[in-house]
Image (cartoon, rainbow, N blue to C red; front, side, top):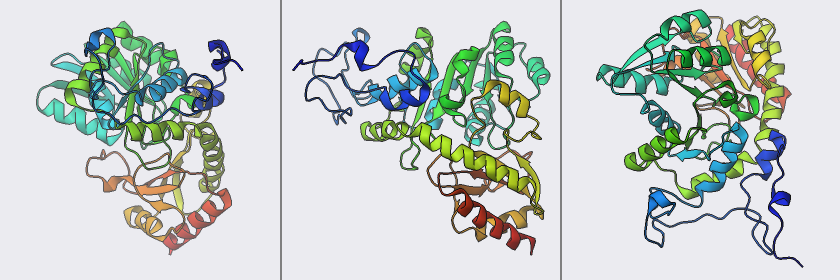
Length: 388
């Protein structure tokens, strides 16, 4: 029996993304080796500690448990360099914003994830940066904000309004203006779109959501193909201590293994629910890019491999009726976050940092992998209670 398998047999090139989620980040195929990478619980590593020459040295700089996840995410996003895992999605957001020069100008969607907006607004209030918010679905309005900008922040679909940005056009315009482009790809995942292919400089994820997929870890990540940017991001992670635990990262990689199956199931259910909600008398509006009536449908159809598993609905009867729906569901879970195996529902304006332009009666639905008819029956009975 041979002691090792050739590298080419270990992981062929040009695999489909739904194969990569399973096959990437595996240990070398030596005889009797483990199929899964191990968890390495160590705060320090033997050696001279010359980090610039590739030594691990210390657990704040590197951990072998990070490597398989970072390699897998990079392969999924089409990056030429390994990704970087962070302690949380907001840690990844903060690292990306740190790429701005002192006093730099940041152009950000007005309906970005409220945590990202809160970080940017806090830094703007301290004079660290200048923040310009814009309707990211209005391409010309975004272009008008780019002169003098140092960074364009892309989020598509946006959270929670599900607006679709014209990724390639805006990325090209930002680069022409001399701005870096950061894309938050949490909602779509690399199975839905790969912003690096549209020219984005940095892509970030709240790994907590779809990538890990089981509502049991808090993690973030960034990927880039630019060595200089990656070095700066590593320095930020190391100096600010925004490091991931090895066990949490191991759990996230385990979650990635089922990413394709989870998204296939939840996305199909989301499409079914969106169609039914559109026809329901208790609903004022449905936001879902998979609906032909959605303003972002054609753009999403052109640049995405699927429309995602998030739906936003506006309930007739205002804030009170929306709250009644949340209180009345029994299968849907009233909770924040998204992307887990369980279906979640929440009224987004309950968060004090949510922009005032988000309607008070808007509910964000994160569709999980439960039976579609069970999800619909629960939602339908809750909507009937809201109608009185």
